[in-house]
Length: 359
View 1 (cartoon, rainbow, N blue to C red):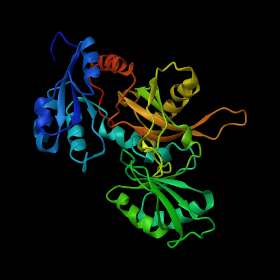
View 2 (view 1 turned 180 degrees about the horizontal axis):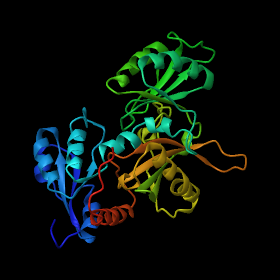
View 3 (view 1 turned 120 degrees about the horizontal axis):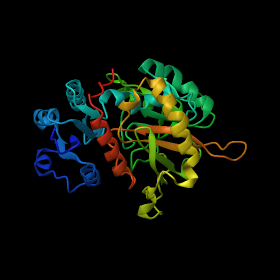
């Protein structure tokens, strides 16, 4: 480590060899974070990752004090199956990695919705670990409780997220007619047999895969609230009217009707969301790290929790239902977040010896 800096970190994002060769701290979506780190005395450099340059990237990361990672679970047909073992190896050799793949597998997968279902952000959430359990249990649950949302354990961009509605009066079973809508942008409503849908979902159980099942939230048209976190503190909010799992526009609607609304960013002190902030910082995050056995210092440097509005209380107050935690590649972020990230990274690098990676 250079004596005139707080330490050296690499910022990792996905690209190709050409992108890696041209990468600069001054351009791109992470430029504000590079600038904030520089103001804190942290030397940061780009480390564009692609599988074809994995040995080169690994050598670069081993020369760092810390590594900050922005790589989606699934992107253009590629996943993190090679990146995550590399990051585990780099961390095992004493380099601080955020977010560590083991933390992602506790927090940043849909299974967290089931494991934390008894916290105040939970709902009627079920987990299917096997194809057999899914086929045996899902039809009856769909018939008993109305529209459900199925989610593959690890994904992004709405991939592997389905709203399923049983036809009125239909008996549950393979031949039951269902209406299905994929959350991926541009999807159309499909009508099919329930058995055909379950066949389609078989791939989500490959390897260590699984499916999570939640009730569809009737207040979805009111929008989604994204709560941005640096470690265990809220650094801002984003509210957006989303189109995922909403009926697609008709032919007579204007082209923009199928697009999500802009995400309206606000600071951590935004008054309408103070009840949510209080619950996150004072109750839900402390309970989550205890339940998931996560060391507080291993919480991601930047992450977010996506909430939908749940049923109002008897007194008319809003409730919030967690629908996803994002860790792998959180962008865009509120204006205040880069400075908070940089301050936390500086403190983390100063707190040597390194904290061991999570078990």
